[in-house]
Length: 401
Ligand SMILES: Cc1ncc(COP(=O)(O)O)c(C=O)c1O
Image 1: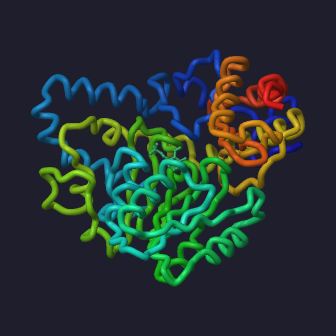
Image 2: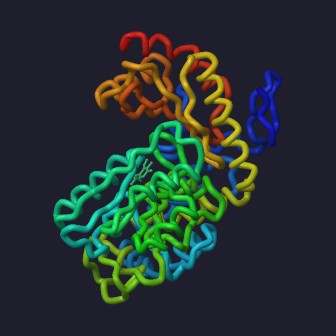
């Protein structure tokens, strides 16, 4: 195997990116192969933009004079928003900061005037919490949800696009689609698909939870609602996310909570939720700044190569079947053998056993015919962590077969 586009160690595996040692405070006794779920926040050691330290400073400032801190907050949030928008290539007037994508999807679904008989399209690769939100909203409005099934091995973006478009009916009002899927690390809501849906008059909600920091200039201005987490791949403290909307939506947005900023309209009306910890948002630009200083292209290439390496060793040494890899994605998904991780309970049991026996964090999502195991790759990961998982996996899996 060769892993083009970066350094290699003596065995041919991707080498660590120079100058990135000691960036994080993760427990060195464990292998954290699940950056995709909760991210990790850069630490205050020898880093030009120490995000954890900055957030601590902001919290200290807040505790010294809460009145002063909250009085200045709207202005500071606006400054942070502009910086985030610039890094993501978005229009700052049409981008709001939020806690997380789960919340942003709720705002989007609340803002769409769904009526009885309307249909919303989702896929079976969608994130569970998001799909549940769609189902609840549709039920409240007498609308229906159509779930497009995408084969796990759907070969490429064209095939994905055609399959999704085949699910559109005359009553399809909206589509909630992932840019990068959580269980399968695929790309679905590519620009061509969003354009095609718009041409058909379908409102698009793009769950781009993984995109900021992972994909270059990721915000798609064609999408009606575009949601991305900053606390996954953009090194922001939890919880920080963005909602970007297309021009017809700012005036029609329905914030989850009515606040003092309500009359100022979007984005302040969505951002403000009373007394709350806004320090993750104020520190978020530092995470993006760090990524820029490290050279985002270099970080992305490193992570993608390492994820590919992880996939290859898991396929070769553990005999798992890899799913097709999507370009630019720093995560890989592989199929567990039949009988392993097919139910929610079994998937959780596989993760727990891998943690207790191998001190390794992975994600397993239930899937009929064999669960889907996902590994991520971030600057702190090393080839030997995937190798150890591949060699040690047989034992925790044996009990399911
Ligand atoms: C595709 C996708 N959507 C939404 C989410 C939800 O993110 P959050 O819990 O930060 O709202 C996740 C989290 O892993 C995700 O992977």
